[in-house]
Length: 447
Image (tube, rainbow, N blue to C red; front, top):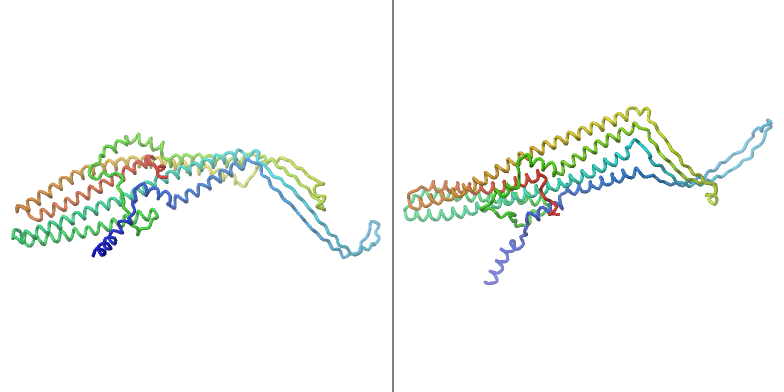
């Protein structure tokens, strides 16, 4: 018998023992390591580094080498030819073999091309730094998205607990109603009403459990984890009962100050500024086609018909080439127009982003303020609804109240708890969203 009890104990406790703990910090760390778009962005960053290296390489002389071997055979069938004096001369058949060996190296260097090479370095440098800044902003967005998924799990879990407690309450209350009916204190209709209330509570519990499982699957799928594994989630704040919203609100100033902070801190805004500088450098590169270009070239070579005499005859060459564009089939004008349009578009993108940041800050602050007010009101409603349920149940127990009043009070209390939980995590989401809009959402502590 004892062995059977032990076996049953281990069977029912194994899922609990195998359950892993997944904190919000752990979730963010995993997201920053496994997010496929982030991995692609890091890979693309290497291409920007390569482009900058290539731009610097354009300032350096090029150098190449070559070796040539050539063999030629001439077969002449012979014939008759006239010499200088007009006499016929017989040419006998002949075969001639020729071999040719050549080795050399050389290259060139651009001395001037309208400063296009220097502008290209500036352009690629700005593109690289902009890519780095946008990568940092992307990491902040991942932190925000992961937190949102995690809060959704905690929210659903708390709602599930509320539904579980409500089922227990209604089960206990059903026992009370049945006992009172047995004693003849209440009608059978009260028993039926409470049975319906309990059935609805059980249905809502099932729905809450499904919502919790869906939220959990969404989080684990986003993190690239196995959705079939069991995890325990930990509230990073632990302030469900009493949260000091004023403490969090003190982190934010008025909208104008926050907008200035965002423009100074936002990585994507700085990156867009660099992209505008890169577009201006592109105009300089395009205009370089108007100016003359000066190129230096150099080479060394040696050739012979016998490899043993290959280095007996050497050729050194150094020269300058000045190219002056006169007519380029309107290609230069087309490049300039295209570059200027890109510059204007980059400037417009910067202005659009600036306006978008202002909207995000203003709307984010309004959302946070509304979330704070909603949480304050929901907290008070919970206290009021809980007291109202107690009063109506006491009145019912004393025979001065109806069961409908108790059932309604119970629904109001459950709704008040649900609204408070939703308001709590909406407040956390709004706070993190505003922090991200300000460019202050820290991601480095998770790396």
